[in-house]
Image 1 (cartoon, rainbow, N blue to C red):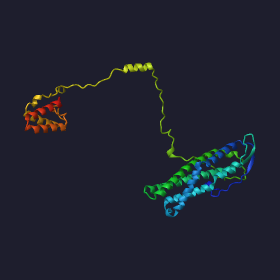
Image 2: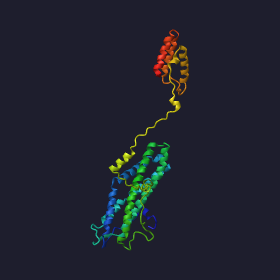
Image 3: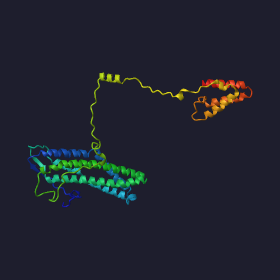
Image 4: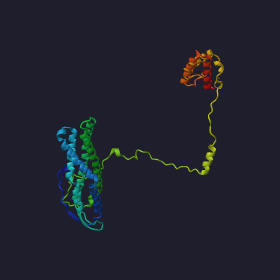
Length: 347
């Protein structure tokens, strides 16, 4: 165990589980509680989903081994599968259950009892280190594989297989991060208890140049940062209480009537042209009137001097047609009908 990465030993020799009599067993209660809680978490649905997804990745890799074996993304999946198999072989739950069974049934500061040696406890911590770093390796392989398969997805290559592969990799990465966080929390709670366990001088698990880290940092997620750092503090200002008397006084002061906007009448607007029936005294006058009004109606908008601007276009054309038809046979009747039509429409 002279290697600095001794926690990564493929065949790490477990020290014999030996118990020694100690006078104070109160600290063992906390050790038992945190280990028991972690073992319960390993049987939760998240852990089951992790195992099922890991098995699915292995099946996907085996199914597409001949088609994608030369692709860099597929090689990352192979590395991911190897890390998952290594994690399965680690079997941390078995070691924790075995160590938990060696703890005394009754723990108290005033009671003595048989406790496992420090070597056995350090072995558990080393297993936790391996569990933590294996999940770190799993997340690295997930990121490498997802980068490649995302590029395939953008190019519309192997849509069905690529989509399923990315979904499985994303789920593994998420669940791996959760398990790594739980293992880091367990390690941080167990690490200070090392000195409380009895030690056999002739049988040390760790070499002199090896030392367990004092603390493990849970995986950081940049997307799930706390919002308290981004949002400013909100200061609630107390609302001013207004009584009914004050409200009535304010309403009485504000009730000054309604302001009505009036348009000033200009001198030009006051003198509007008035229609005179005498302009249609003769047939010639009527023809001049039709010619003048037709020119004025073509302007946009028609001027104020255009008396027929409010008459609809089809009505104006109909009146002209009727006047022209009757003009050759009955000019007086044509003039009379046209004059009545204009007078009724304008006045």
